[in-house]
Length: 319
Image 1 (tube, rainbow, N blue to C red):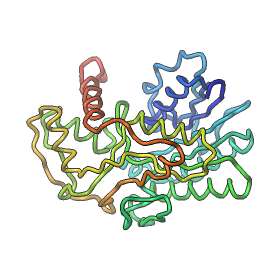
Image 2: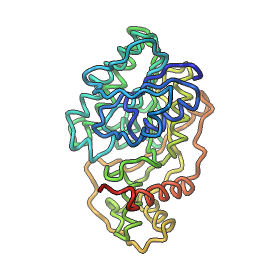
Image 3: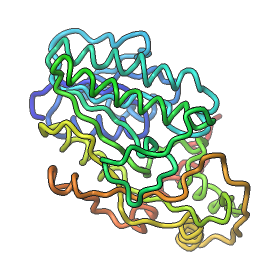
Image 4: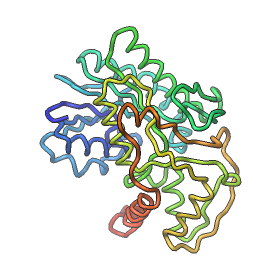
């Protein structure tokens, strides 16, 4: 990446800000494009004085206003959490369609390598386990989750069409559940929700009986997979995620243990179309990229708990 000019859409989000930081560390000049609808300036505040970092406030649904040479485009701009995509359904669909098209147009115009940050949600509530990239998925196209699932499926179809029709150097990463510092604490995702509840001594709200599984990946490991795929010549899709499967109930109990909390577990209704299982087949990532996650779940959770605890201190709370 040394000397490359890289555009990161959604670069002020949780994952995007970690990617910007990594790319700067690798020697790239980074242009972060974000509308700040769900991203936050605080995520990139440590980067704003870096001589190779530029922030552009823009909505990718209206275009990607970046001039000059571009070597890589990492397209992460999207509403990503259930709380936000249920609140912003039309915006979610537009970012997957119009936003992806505009980001691809930038890559096509500049001859840049393009990476789409897709999601394991394209597999829906899977009937194949673990999920290999060849699996087409089991998605309810009109359910409440569909605005996110189908936005990403459309984004994948668009990326593949640009590659076939125009020869765009494009690839697709299917990202599984990623966690770590800078996750929005109120977006409903399971790790920050459980950690906050445990630190407050409140019941951990486990959906259903908690037997549904997730495969969590520490954020720096996910970013490493994205960079490797972006620097490869492979078209994808490639699964990027942890393959240490854990039930939601086990995760809740682990977080209670690691925080030393007195919290109990409270079972709440299971959301519609909530996936029952989730684990990536990582054969492609290992074989093509030499990548697999390195950070054990307990280690990553401890680091995340420490970060969330710091955010709860008075100096971090709104005035």
